[in-house]
Amino acid sequence: MSMSRASSGSTATEKFPDIPDVELTVPTPLPHNVSTVSAPSAMPARAPGDRRVHYVSNVDTSAALEGASHMPPLSPASGIRRRNTRSNTFRTLEEFEDFEGQPGWRPGAEPGIDPLKPDGGQDTMPNLHAECQVTVVDFSQDDLQIHEMYNEELIDFVKKPQPDWVKCRWINVNGLSWDVIQALGQYKDLHRLAIEDTMNTRNRTKADWYANHAFVILTCQKLVRLIEDDSSDDDSDGDDRGSVKSSNSHASIKSLTRKLKRWLTRKKIEHPTAASVLESGTRQTGTPGHEFTHKPTGFSDVFNPNTLCTLQRFHASPNSTRTEYMEKHSALAARGLAVMAEQVALFITSDNTVIAFFEQSADDVEKPILARLGSPTTILRQSCDASMVAQAIIDAIIDMAIPVTACYIDVVGDLELDVLTHPTVQHTKSLYIIISEVNKMFSLLNPIQTLVNALRDHKTKLTQEQVPTQLQNPLGGVIISPMTYTYLGDVYDHCVLITENLTQIKQSAEHMIDLIFNTIATSQNESIKQLTNVTILFLPLTFLTGYFGQNFQVFQPVEGSVSYFWYIAVPVAVVTYLVVMREAIYEHLVRFFQRRHILGIRKRRKEKIAQAKVNRRLYPRKTL
Image (cartoon, rainbow, N blue to C red; front, side, top):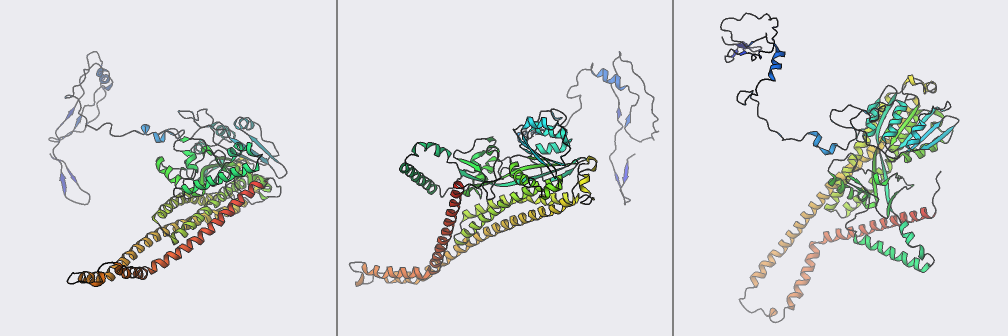
């Protein structure tokens, strides 16, 4: 009897091939094994001719397993044949070394890092240690205390009870170290997932909400200038300071040497920016004779130049060759500038405490906020609100990106003048690098808008008058006060302003690339047109020259000297060249004077900047 199956929605049937009657049995156990017969299950009666698979159910499986150890091994012919598969055709994840460097990450590992365990609840100890600079700010409306400490001192400090007069506490950590993170995690019962994200610096911008704290991650971008360090030269010239003549001669020689070096390297600019400080996979010492320094014109200070992460290296691919090339040919490298990027982690706890983790840039954010907290009349001091402190930190991080966009606008403006006056294919490479850097900056700054909106969405239902009474209530959860909601709108405006500028820079660079290729193509077409005009002009002359050049009879003007030919050929050639190339000559003269004017403006601007540097060295401005 053949089996048939009716398809849904159709009366047609499909016949399957006949299945032979198969009896599945288990080999008889050895005599020393005692078999136990299980109760037979009720089997339905089989119709005559109905072929089905029959299973023997009264089999002692335990006896069969015990007897299997005494059975001889099966031969390949008698055993179960397996499908042949290819082996060693892929690498397992454990062999992929690019992921080995991430602390605490293994496939299938327990998520998060537990601060209550010495090893964090992982198979290996977290290999993250650094000498951190920690600033603890305790303040109320009437008092302010600032404590500066290192790792061991912080661990002992958090074990002490918080004074009763403290209304708000801000812990600012400069550097990432497991002992500090573990101590603060135990101190405020931070969630293990948030601790893992703090230690892993390859996270996205986000805001997570837990039972007793909120966790925020964002990226800090700042502009760093590389200047020459003349300390070694000053030390070597100490013996010559007694003689004014020798010092002046040395200064002149030094100036000539620098000018000669600049002239020799003018076509191949390789400024010792972060590309010479940071090498792939290693951390080397700084470039001799140079250092990163703080400038009052929006350029940030540096905590440790040997561990800086440039924009090209931040969240970069494992292709170190590409990263080094992009660093060396960065749009800001010709000006001795670099963009540094790092991850910032913020914790806002339910007991009105803020904990901030920076990799390098804690001082840049800390100084302006401490200046505001130092005055009892500021909003930040009067509110004693942890959410307002977090808003001030985020606002300072966003403001540090404004000089970066301003510098890129200046670079693109200079390139635009070069493209309009004398476009070359080399400009397209510079513009492509600018576009890649701007795209990365945009991808890091644009999510902050969503972050700010997420914080504003968690605005408390309490009024501003009710908020001070609930700020230190651990059972009330994290409070985003109405005042913080208002000032986060200003942070959002700054984000929008920066992203719009980045979008404009990107569009300008893309349009300039199109302009370069269109200009070059048009110039080539004009050259071909000019050559065609010259060919058409001299085509009849060539015919006449060939016709009258046939030696049918003697031509007296060319007998003897050929000066007669040159008297006619040179003026005709010059006049023809001027007539045909008049537009190209005019455009070349216009570009020449435009370039001369632009170079003069740039030279005066550089002299002004150099004079400002000298004035800052001679008359340093005192900062509080």
